[in-house]
Length: 189
Length: 189
DNA sequence: GTCTATAGGAAGATAGAC
DNA sequence: GTCTATCTTCCTATAGAC
Image 1 (cartoon, rainbow over the protein chains, first blue to last red):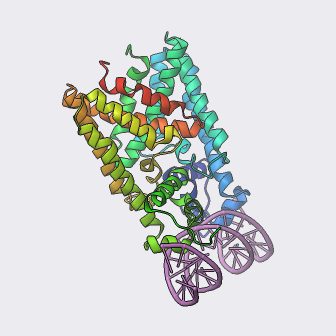
Image 2: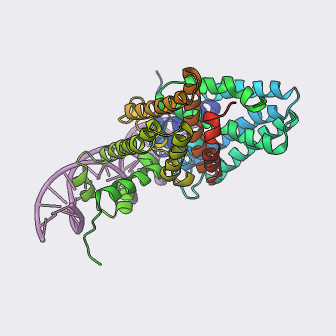
Image 3: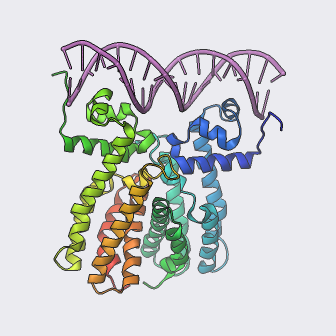
């Protein structure tokens, strides 16, 4: 086996992302990040001159880009609202690995705190998500206020089910959330 | 002003708890814990010989004890289910400072991970909470399965609303969760 | 029961060879 | 673009005076 490691861009970001989602910002030490990527510290600094904070920022931005392309854009796309929500659910299942991986928006919220480096990006991402979902529900015939309340509630249920799944070591809460989501968003209730 | 700090037991635990809830386990360094308590490192080690892990464990246990005494016991108490849930809501508002403080069950979940020192306690606390809430809803006339599903959903909504409140820097999601909780649990929906 | 002082190690980050 | 080696800072933890 050769001495020099190598890793393509996408795989690198995916592995860094997994580490931050598992350990949080402070828990994901350079030793951990080096181990999961197979790159030595200095190699990580070559790619990310501003160090760990840049790694977390780029991972968070990449997650936002993925969310926009795979979840939010399809929500604004063609097809019935029910179809669009169905597509979103498939992507969410993939993104959170069926409830086994946590959400960066939760795990990076405690980093530095009080207007930390990620605060603005986290808030924007939450708002973009709720807005896109709101528009889909308006398309489904709901009035603006109801649509927005349900969109926000969908995001709350997602985050809460991930917290409970991680806390109990059982992905069932997340899986049941996904199953119930169409009814939660579109139901007559 | 004198050189020696002092702090009573309850205040000490409250301040340590606030620090872990704000910064997480790894983020709450001894420097931080020393600052928020006003005690020097060595004084903290006198009280907690096993160090930071013991501090977090005792804080988590104290939170569990507080929850049992102030939230779960009242849920099993006398009064109508609606009254008992109303009392729970008042205590939750107090415990989470109206959405300004996060939940230890979420912030300590990433510590060490994979059967870390808090894993068992976190799972037990979630289960005790859901069980107590389930019993109250059975008392209210719901069948066992519906009661349990709604109890779990109540906990999911709580955790999710706290995550969204923290992520957006706005306590509104938590406040609206509290307001809607009686209907969520007892409503005909 | 608190303090000052410090040990010992792990953290983030950099220099320079290849 | 990756590596080895090193630097500095911060962190956890301990020793011992008061």
